[in-house]
Length: 486
Image 1: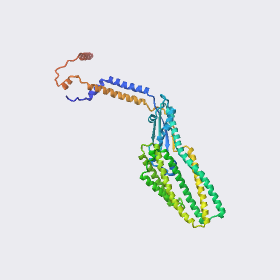
Image 2: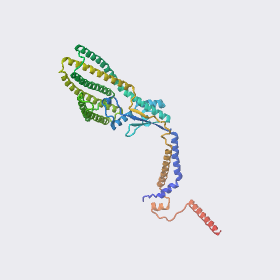
Image 3: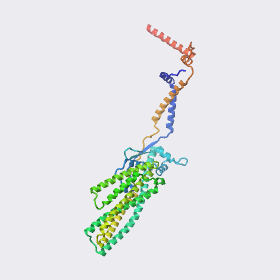
Image 4: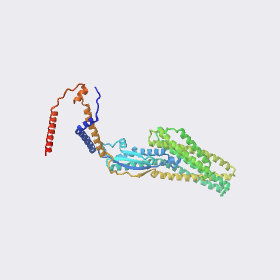
């Protein structure tokens, strides 16, 4: 049997002969589309814009980075905030305030987040777009507004929890520092009266000033160490066992060691160089670059070692590594300061005994004063941080009131239904014609049966049609002849 050849003209003739069938199929598709548009309620979308700035939390205040963070850190910060925005603590209250109960239950949280909330960061910017859908324009706007408000409140709660731990620690230290200051001042006054020392020599003054600068650096460093330890304890309490067990990478260890050495070198310059000295400027630049490299490495390692963790847990891991680095730096600086203290103690030992005693009590009073002032300042900052709203997230555009639904799109739906109807109807008629295997003409006999055609018997309808055509042609001929005579 020969392969069947398909002629495009034949296909077009099939389609042309079945225009009514195709039109009916298309009308059916349009009817279904119209019913869909009537039954399906419209969906409206409200949009708000947020600016996500670099977070300056507790750990970052201790181990400060350069003013501009890396792209990876900014991206991680935006992803973290996007996950917090879609967390249960933020979304479930929105569901309860905006949705109605069905069979005694609110809409499912997972389905609501996947189907109703979309967050889209703008590339190379700090802008995060938040889209929320609803059945009416007012519902969409209300849900978006409540979501953003709940998100900001949740950020405030997380920030306040960290600030509260710092504030409680500082309150205890301020109380003890105040007592120590009062005792040191009383001992200084008593020593001055007992030894009648009311003025100092240049050598005593120089040693006393150098010791004061060194003790200020020591007190500041000790406070940084204790604060970092308190922050690390708070972070470990929030981390899961699996998250807390992630170890440092060799690269993080290397940067921590390098940073600690640089800070120790800077500590050894205390009392020798001012901040404007070239050596001090050079060491400050090296420290800033190393801190930035450390922060970049921390972000990369956290993303690699905890890809399946939540963004919130990844942020805690990042803060954990930063706090551990701050502790290592403070411990290294303590060693450098201790070496300087040993050198100064040798110089003090050359002075007369009464002068040595005066320097010691004066030093204790100065240190106690510096520590108390420093702690009091930190305490006030912690109190302010505990009650203020975090400003790393700013609302650029409030939730919009949509003017028209985003779906269903009526014109597009009807156009697609018409196209699909035409294609389906045409395909149906062509397939039906091609699947028809009966003998339809003398050509089919010769092609499929390989037999010669001796003659054909027309059916009654064909004969009648031929007679009609002949009669019509005869009448036309007579009419033309009559017209010629005239």
